[in-house]
Length: 168
Image (cartoon, rainbow, N blue to C red; front, side, top):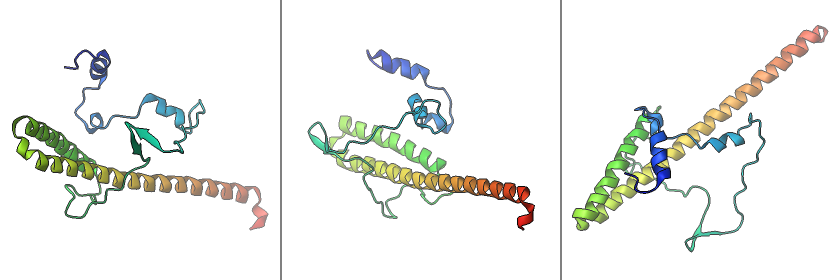
């Protein structure tokens, strides 16, 4: 039940009804396509603010806050070759930890601090795993761009060699 907010109800009705992992991690909003290099509309991404920003009177920093995790704090395997299963596992842990925390608030307030620590640890693990995923994605994208550059240069060399055979 989404109460009296018709936007939330409409959004819930429009969500895809699939059981694969893509339902867990929704795609970016449609306006993100405007910032793609192959977009017909050239829009520069917004610049981050240069001055300090306050939200509810609290200063906010931009960028990820470093949350280093020790080896014994990981609830999953960040070194796994495929991290999809690890993300799904952490998402399930987050759902159960949030329900346990809510249950603690309702039925056993004495258990709230330990449940809150577990919830916080699951969030730290999610943040750490997302950083690992970003690093892997950056590496893959860099290798892809380098491969494209090498292919272009090889094509250029082949064209030059074919047009000027006497230079060998």
